Amino acid sequence: MRILISNDDGIQSPGLRALVEALRDYGELWVIAPDREQSAVGHAITLSEPIRLFPWTMEGVDHVYAISGTPADCVKLAITELMPEKPDMVLSGVNRGENTGISVIYSGTVSAATEGTINDIPSVAVSLGSFTSTRFEPAAEVARRVVDLVIARGLPADTLLNVNVPDLPLERLKGFRATRQGRARFQETFIKRADPRGKIYYWMDGAKVPLQETETDSAALHEGYVTITPIRLDFTHHEFLPELRRWPLELHAEAKA
Ligand code: MN
Image 1 (cartoon, rainbow, N blue to C red):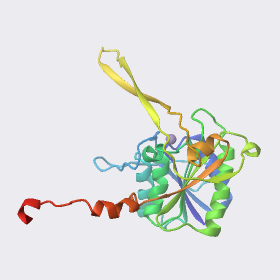
Image 2 (cartoon, protein in one colour; image 1 turned 90 degrees about the horizontal axis):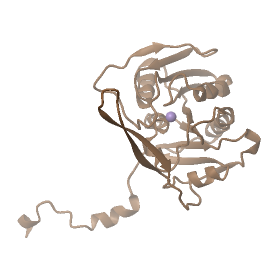
Image 3 (cartoon, rainbow, N blue to C red; image 1 turned 90 degrees about the vertical axis):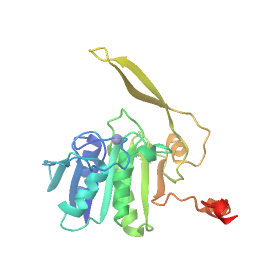
Image 4 (cartoon, helix red, strand yellow; image 1 turned 30 degrees about the horizontal axis):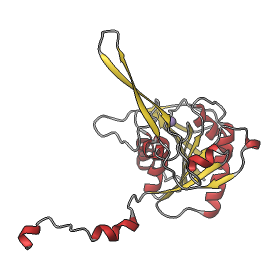
């Protein structure tokens, strides 16, 4: 079994370390992660500058690299260039902070897993429901169980699993909930300041908007459940497509008349 592990918090992240520790006895691990934090870069890829590779050391892991790119770059470079054979699975995380609802769109963590799915490799993203906690071990243990299930059951084509774990000790986690992606989002605020030379800059901040959702990733996570959400590559709103086709979609209506 050959597993590729990446993240968006960077190669030095304790969440990445916890995931590596948990998966250590699963076979050949490859750790290829950004050389710095790349949270919220989404599925960005690097085209306008080189991608640098820095051999790294991590106890007990043979193949560890930090790269000067995004999470999607990490998985692309690993699969097409660095690894002699495709991995059997791609894992991303454990991320510092939940990736539920609308955050999935911005998440570099989810994007590393998405890149695996694009390459037809079963892929799982794992995030911890806290931006301040250092308790990554329960989430890493959950990741192990999910990996076992994916090995046993497989995943449908073009589908990845997005797993979010409450910041609780393992024995206090209420169990798994298979959920849909919700609509939870952050309301951004911009802090406006002056730099030492008097130039104005902005720094984005935000707070989660409270929502009365049920049966979503965000809602179940905050009830203390590990959430597991199947995410697909296809963004198409299939149910709306027939209605859309009934729109007068004519570019040259007057020529026809
Ligand atoms: Mn992150």
